[in-house]
Length: 147
Image 1 (cartoon, rainbow, N blue to C red):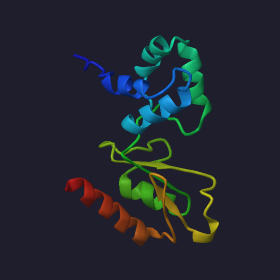
Image 2 (image 1 turned 180 degrees about the vertical axis):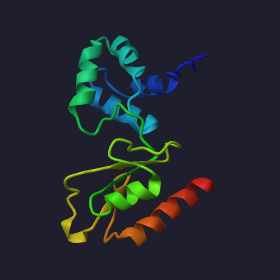
Image 3 (image 1 turned 90 degrees about the horizontal axis):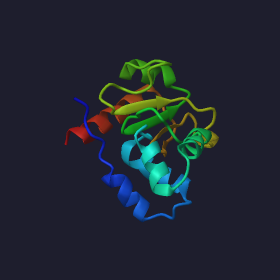
Image 4 (image 1 turned 30 degrees about the horizontal axis):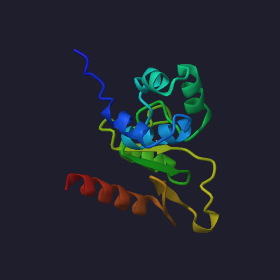
């Protein structure tokens, strides 16, 4: 039995935007789900009076949008990438933990060279990272979720 997709959060988002604001609508949807579920494309096409392909092309054009589920905490790092993957049981192909708590992404530049090595969690910069500091940060995030 398949669970029925709840479109009510999408409807609330649509109430707050013009029909032409596809990027803003997709950003708000991704903020809720941490990715863009496949179910939204035909629904948005109907609600916005546009083609499904148009919405999909916007979603795939911009790097910030993801069509794959991401964890609650999206971690971006280059210097301690292998440490993070090992600690979280991830790899180059498997980027999100099974519990959807963490996603580790690679980036070419975070724009914070003066603070390097840098790690970001949901776009919050954590400067001067090393494996010990990363371990403490992961522990802190896990404890926060356990509360």
